[in-house]
Amino acid sequence: MPPERLLGLVARGDEGAFEQIYDRLAGAAYGLIRRVVRDPAQAEEVTQEVMLEVWRTASRFDPDRGSAATWVLTIAHRRAIDRVRSTTASVAREQRVVEVEVPADYVADVVEANLERERVRRCLDGLTPLQRESITLAYYGGYSYPQVAGLLGVALGTIKTRIRDGLIRLRDCLGVTA
Amino acid sequence: MRLLRENQQGLTGVYAVGAMTSEAEREKFERHLRRCASCASEVRGLRDTATMLALAAAEQPPPELRVRTLAQVRRTRQLPPQVEPRRGSGAKRWAPRLRLAVPVTVAAASLLAILVLAVAQVRVQRSLHQAQAQNAAIAAVLATPGARIVTGPTSAGGTTTAVVAVARHEVVVTTTGLPGLPAGRVYEMWLIGRTGARPIGLARPMPSGHTVPILAAGLARGDRLGITVEPAGGTRHPTTTPIVVLPLT
Ligand SMILES: [Zn+2]
View 1 (cartoon, chains in turn orange, red):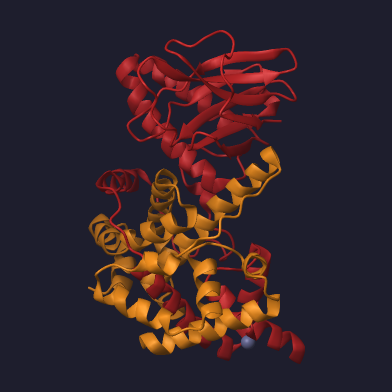
View 2: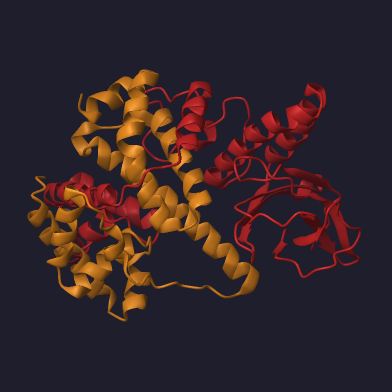
């Protein structure tokens, strides 16, 4: 059954359908969240919050606005960012130092012996270095675009454009249909 | 207007990878999406592309997470369809029995999850009645209007979270991800004020990786929370450098 239909069942309180959604998407949610928040214990907490939010708010899922996977993973990404931004704020308050760790090699990190991953990696390799770094810092790193601009020492407008045209190239390479 | 439209057009990618600076900026762009078919269609494809990036990063989550999540789902009421307009996630309904005053709802939700685990744990050690009384006291702190969540990393790793109810002069403290200690050593928590440090309890680990929440009364303005490593049983005064000092008020 496609995940979009499963979410419809979840909205009506079907716990079995929720288990299937969990089994299909919790791994991606957890992997994404762990990349953004880094700490595995916190990543677990956030993943649990996200999956619970999926259960609670399944009735708000609108298939006309995107796929079920996109809906779930958007929640995951937002909650992960909420978590790092609140932690960063308190570090700043406490120590007046914000440590921005520049991830050395996200892209290589993504790779595993999995065809889908291979395909994504190949397509990422096809981007210009600036496109690739902007996208991975923003998405896997959880940085806002002004932060990405700061990290890469590039103008704001350039970052917006590189993220957009990099994603468009990635979309075409992956054969995503809108 | 044309300039504005171009500005917004440039944001499709940033929006798709979740890199907007604020919720306000995101909502503004979502208003544009409702009016602009070309941006909306582009955003759809770009968000699905970002989803591919997430799927490529998938990792096996710990199996206990599945057990915990499914157990929690069974206890959690769902939102009915379209009760309120789209704004807000309705996170305040997260726990039907407990109305939260704490503004940081995500952190509050995870804190609640910790508390739920804490009860199960505490029940083993004390009578049910005592556990319930302790929990009611913690719930009262969480439900205090104006209660705030303060969180910060410790130098040893892990995170400290405190719910501060200034009006009640109370604070609830828990931690997650503190590294294990050698035998004979414990983490001790302190309220540090003008008159020095006052012990408020030992951080007792739970299987979840959190520590049992500690409720401390007598919170004064300017108090800070400290955690030190001490000999088993704790001490009356800190003997080591705190691994975290968190301003609470
Ligand atoms: Zn537009």
